[in-house]
Image (cartoon, rainbow, N blue to C red; front, side, top):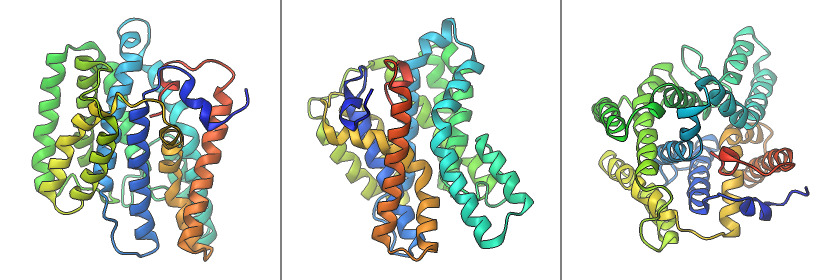
Length: 328
């Protein structure tokens, strides 16, 4: 099967609104890191809300794709194996670039090799930084934690019990947020404090699908994408607005579900995860090579597109099912 981005959206079961949101979120995170790496003024878009949205989408998609099987014939181990397979390649490419860059600057020390081996297993270094070779990998570690809980426990409980768990997670997350603990930093302890925050988002995503399925909220899905871009801007102003933006995200997700097939959304969804998993080490390498920011952006986009193309081509021999229909 000849790969083109235009045929991703006709493989069946794809929700283009989620693709659009995912693409906007990935670009917002990349712009944030571009500003930090090239020492520009801070980005006006919140990377934190972008990651929160990823977890809401992940809970929604995992419930949509796997929950019925997890209740019947799929083991948690099999589920986690599928998640590793789905998430591994872009993370491995980004982390290998990160290892090569650090090794070129300071040599290939034993602790770097250990960090590289851990990151390929989606595990942190117990120290600071927790993910020295590829910063966004922290969220993939938390994603796998959520997936393990989903396979072992969450898929087996009722919607009411799920709400109780979500409230419990929120009761940890909200006070920690007000105390500044559930805000990202490179330290291992910071990543641990972020687990309740992202687990709350993941649980909300599960609840949305269980309660509403694919039924959209309203009939103007493009407004949901615009609203998300606005929420990203508001969340960057202060903590109360960040919390307000987070509260709006579940409604934005539901409002996006009615989006028809649109080429730009297909592209955005296809490259969102490869971009997210590789952009930091690629931009760091570009700056180390003396490349101007525009060329760094082009290089990061090219790497993401190549990985997306390779990944979809590899999967293209058979009609995709389940999580192969919706990248997350």
